[in-house]
Image (cartoon, rainbow, N blue to C red; front, side, top):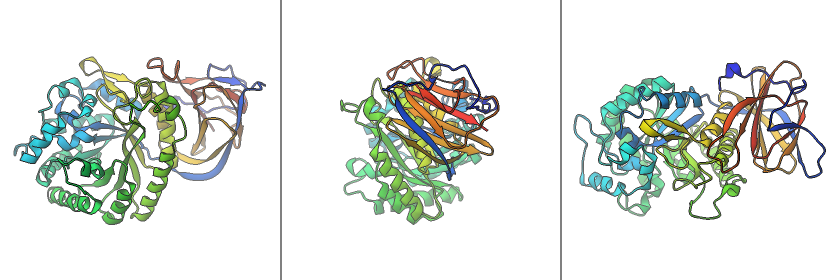
Length: 477
């Protein structure tokens, strides 16, 4: 959505209402909540908060992340004009690099590449990559990637092959990335989910603990900085181990630019209890990660925390949930929850035709915008805004997020209940000027098509009802 077209919201003027917002009515079974808007400032949401994450071998096809792939450029720019692309994933640890000095093949790397061919994550790459698992990342792919970043306005987090790669290979690859990405490069990462390496004998033997990881991490950093002295690094990009994040932050000082880890809301997909109801319920594991992230940030030398890989359900997603409207409601609420928790960004994983991919690959590399994409668009409206205190008083599965920028205010209301909820707004509300609101909606939680994030008419007054499974974004002066 173009913010210049998002006019001030009037909550007092009479307006004709669209579906998704109805005037308050006396119904005994209608859930009621009050939204209490405070003045406490909670922190600025960075302009580059929104991010996408892809498996590194997607670079085996130089035509994908390319300015010539205009449909993908358009999809990225429509999502955010200042986003962050992260390349990594499990496949990053079995990729081949083919530079002017060869591909640095070693018995370990050859074994790793063969082993990696069985990974299910190849589904998260486009069909040409899946058909060429013996491919390689090349200088041409990196050159096209740099032009793609400049065409979209996005930054880059680039994962180096730590599983079966080498410091020497990382140094050469990083040199090309730095040259082509320029000021679009946010950070390199050494390894993907290295806290799980102890369970993958091909990569490391048990026990594989943080001290060993950090020693190897420094070897990679030293090799890269011998060629690129000011190369920025982030880490440790763990799967679940937030203690590693804390210890990493304490040890790197100012030699890194960011802390990182992953988060999947539920899984595995084969578990029948991992369903829509679970996804849209309160997630205690997320509460725990937010608290641990705050602790790690507090122990570091001014580093911030970014969730660099995650999505709705690990293992590729849950059919009928991860690829449906339910994921849009979850994604919008999840990203805003993390923003309120102090995260400097969220990168949702995807690619190819994976179930949870926000942008899937269509025919001839065309793009297919999945429901989750629209949930991300909803949350993106808070990038560059400062969050402030807001409370929901009452019993309903509804969350509220309040922010301001200059004289403007905006309020997100996400109803994850199936029934309508009556909302009473309490606090400083604009009482003049024409305005509009935006609505995230779909035909049903399992809908894969017909999901929209669009402008609708503003509610009349400070009391109104929100339809079940609907999210509203109100803005006023």
